[in-house]
Length: 351
Image (tube, rainbow, N blue to C red; front, side, top):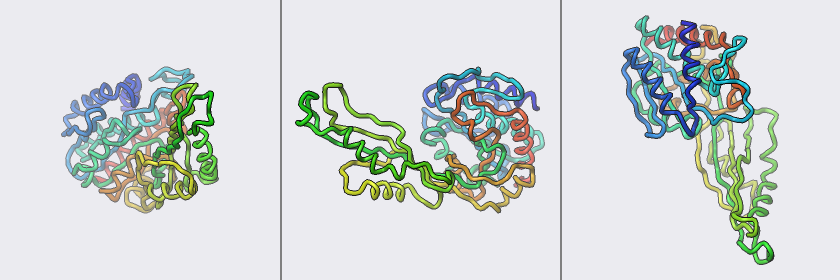
């Protein structure tokens, strides 16, 4: 099984599946593997980003994986699927094709043992999570004995994570010829003043998993070099801990901006997730050999599934620091450990 596990991951890594291209090809590859097992499969979600649930029996654990990745960055020195010194390299190796491969192998073993389970596969976790929105309505998720999200945690157990708020901040000005700037009102300068007011919120906190963080991720302003810009947009990305809400984050931003003139629009939000560190799922994970309890600053589909199932947590192979990084990799020993852990958890949470 160990050789098949690594082979499956390499095969998945060699199919690019970032937010811009390739997702359908990898989705069809994974779908075919699940069909070969003879599982009951339902496909849905939006056409551009399909999702599926593949099940055997009823009431077992739900293994949750996404197979999309962010676009590849610059200066990679490794090939997708390259193996060296016990490391398997490739875009998505840790985030989270490694976890997906471990879940596929665990599914085959649990199927042979006639242990009930289901696998949840999505293709837009890195963007809008519409796949999870489709799957959360499925009885397989609602009636599962637990939901395990396989994001990279070094096989530690993440019992809380931050929520997401993506906002567009807009400054308005008045266009004019650049030779006569006194006839205009520069929107980029207005934006600079707005961001200066936000500077206290842009400071990196000492407790990254316990405090609100705010990042200015993109800025767009102006149309031509000889025109005073009349509009400037800044994308803001806030990450907030439970029990803060996206609405409260927006209100805090507006309070910090004070009486300045601007528009602010919420583009996307995902609630923060937190569960009890003493649930049956977490106890069984710890007893089965997972690592310690941790909290993480990133967000996963766990926040969506927890709305309908009280037993949800995050545990997967690979370092969280590998996510979205150059020369991303997962350690082979962690991949194999994840497979064994998932099999044992499936057995323990049988029905």
